[in-house]
Each structure stands twice: as structure tokens, then as C-alpha cells.
Amino acid sequence: MASTWNPNQYNRFQDERSKPFHDLLALVQPIPGGRAIDLGCGTGELTKVMHERVQARATIGLDNSETMLDKSAAFAGRGLTFKLGTILRFAPRTPFDLIFSNAALQWVDDHELLFERLAAGLAAGGQLAVQMPLNHDHASHVVADAVAGEEPFATALKGYVRRVPVETPEWYAEKLDALGFAEMNVRMQVYPQHLGGPEDVVEWVKGAYLTDYQSRMPAELFPAYLARYSERLLAVLADRRPYFYPYKRLLLWGRK
Image (cartoon, rainbow, N blue to C red; front, side):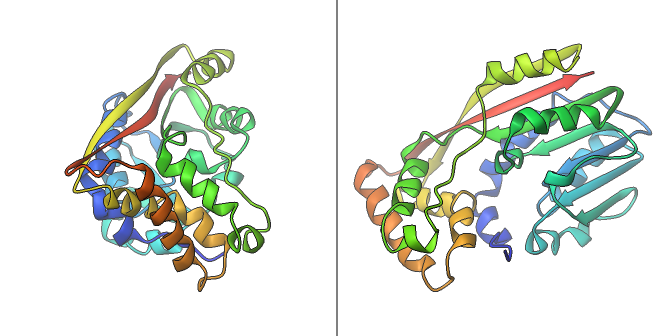
């Protein structure tokens, strides 16, 4: 499927989306001369910040969206490179000193197997740092799934409704322990977003969660889906200005 990720739409809320990245990066200890990889690097701007902050000798930014990676060339160099690829096939021959992923692993199914592969890709003493949204129980996401079950969208999607694979914070803590991580920091954090109004929630979700549905239906049908989504969502959100949008995220860090 062609990428439906739009970097301009995603970055409409750049400051709000980057705060969890900086909180995650603050958990990471420097790896002078080491190797790092950023799984789901997007446009690469934040990958460069990570690369420089951890003092890596070499960092790879990996993403499966050509449209996002088109922006990454401006940030490459001095040991930082970008490549098109999928997290689904992540199985490095040479282990990394840091595996970093900010708001990407929620798109990958089977976290039992995924975290086993991530742990296997770390060198001794290596670090794993992951941030994922935990807001799939908010109306902004629940309504998106409900509309996907309506016609004509259900037929176009062949019955597909997104199932978020993200587990509870304690599940990841137990998993890291079972995988031999000697240190860990796992937490759920609420990020308060003050948007102009409830209609901005539509714009927020349009830049990320809705891309899954957009990629799976004919391009000419998506505007109708978006209109129906907006209608149903705005009917249940309070008309407050500014609009307070609490956004839950999972942050985890571990060292083997």
C-alpha cells in the first residue's frame, strides 16, 4: 500500500508530539562511540537530536514511509544515515548499543514476539527505549473504529477494524524482566494538550491514527469517511475553547 503519512499534517502539532520524545530521550544514557537505531524515525529531525545527544558513532533511522523519509536527507551526515525498511523484519546481524523507537511500535502486531526480537538485537549492556500512545480508549480513537464498521466503509475495508497491540505498562515491565533486562523504567504518562477547539482533535488524529484506515480504502472514499468521523466525534466532545485533550502514552527504558 502506498504511504498515506503526510509529514505536514503530522507536524501540525509538532511541539506537542515532540514532548514525549524528549522525555524518553532523557531516560537514555550516552553510548559514546556506540551504534544506535531509531525504529520509525519519520522525517529524521528528532533522530538527529537523539544521535547527537547519545554521542553515537553511527545511527540508522529506519522508516517504511517514503513520504516521511523524503524529509530526512536534510538531517543525514556525521554518522547518521536513513533507510527505507520495516520494523517487521528487524533482526540485525550486528547488535546495537541502543534501540530507540518513538511512537512507532504501536503499528506492529504481536508485542510478545516483537520485544523478544528487540532484546535479541541488543548488545550486552545495550539499552531499549520505547514510547507508544496509550490513547486508544479515548473517543477520538473509539469513534474512528466505529465509523470503520459503517457502510460503505466496512465493505471497502473488507471488515477491517484496527486493533491496537499495545499492552499495559506492567505487561512490559514483566516482559523486560523475563528477557533479562537488569534495569528498567516503565511508566504511563498523561500529556495535557490544549487545542484551539474540539475540531482540532480531528486534525490531530488525521495525522496519525486515521492513516491506517486511509491506506486501506479507495482514495476517493476517504473524504466521506473523514466527514462522518468528524460528525460523530464532534457530537460527543464538549465544545470547549481551548479544548483540553488528555493524551496517554507509555514510556519504557531498559538496559540488558
